[in-house]
Image 1 (cartoon, rainbow, N blue to C red):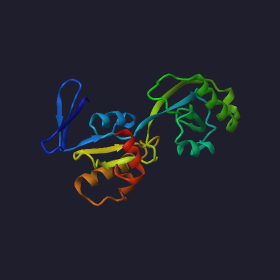
Image 2 (cartoon, helix red, strand yellow):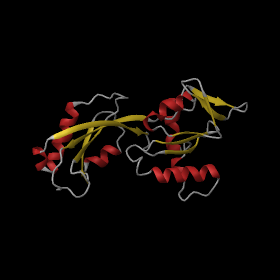
Image 3 (cartoon, rainbow, N blue to C red):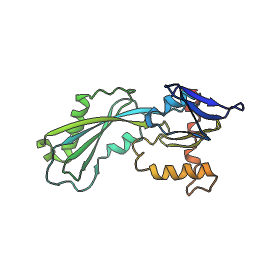
Image 4 (cartoon, rainbow, N blue to C red):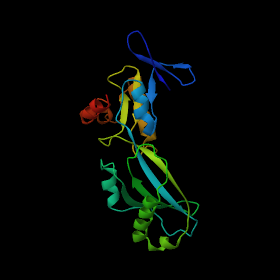
Length: 218
């Protein structure tokens, strides 16, 4: 996307793609996860959504010995932190195939996709404190990704108060999959003028807790 299409009255009525084509519609919804900050900037209605890097280790298959997802106490603090520096905590979960997923890390380093061995080493060391037997398990792969971080730690869902025609569904950090259905239902109700099942005010782009951050990216 290279920019937005506006009506004579200033309403957003579509986007222009990099291929040069125009895509028009009654509403434009930005649901681009960690890339939402960049896209909304191109529409001249920027959101303070930043990528928050995370990495995970995956062990080889083993008999099931972990039957629930397990977090350590550092996880809650890391999720709620605003720090850009590296933070690690333990999240361990078995899969149906018998592998074990070991996380997690949080770090604001832009869209740097390089896997960092020191970060993976720290994740592994913390996991073996909770489950010592994991020290004997080979790791068959690791991967990383980006979470859409918002400074006040709430997703942004609803119409943009600065640009009519623009809607948002982003900023869920690491909970986007779990909250996807509720987000879709809330956005549907707001678009159709129905009474939402939950109060949309805490997630509004115009909420007070986001105001100062909007000024920073404007």
